[in-house]
Figure (spheres, rainbow, N blue to C red):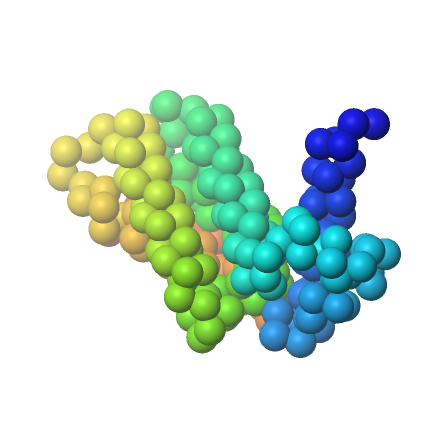
Length: 188
C-alpha cells in the first residue's frame, strides 16, 4: 500500500474514531488524546493529519452534511413527477426524518456550532442555504404551481425535518407524517 493510501486510511480511522467518541462522550469531552488512543497512534501522528480538534470536527461535520445533501438529492430525484404535493412532502419527511445520520451526531454538531464554534456555525448555515435552495428548486420543478411560495415551503420543510428528527431522538413514536404532509400541502 502506498503512502497516500496509508495516510488516507489513518485520516479516515481518525474521523471514525472521533465521531464514535463524540457520540459516546460528547464533542467537548472528547480529547485529541482520546482520539489518538482509540486509533492506536501517537498525538504527533494525529497532528500530522489534523492540526486541531476543530479541524476534525469540521471534517466530520462536512462529511455528515454532504451525506445528508446527497441523500436528499437522491430521494427528491426518485420522486415521480406525477405525485401530488402531499405525496411528495410525505416521502421527503419520512425519508429525511428517519435518517440514521440525522441522529445524535447531528445534534452534537449543531450544538457545537451554536455554542462554541463560529466556523462550524457558518458551515451549517451554508449547508442549510444549500438544502433550502435544493428543496425550493426541486419542489418548483415537481409541482409547477405558480401560486405556491416555494421558498417559504422550503423553510417549512427544513424546519419540520429538523423537528421530527429531534423528536425521534427523544423517543416520540407516533409522529404524524401523513397528517403533517396533508396540512403543509393545504397551505401551498
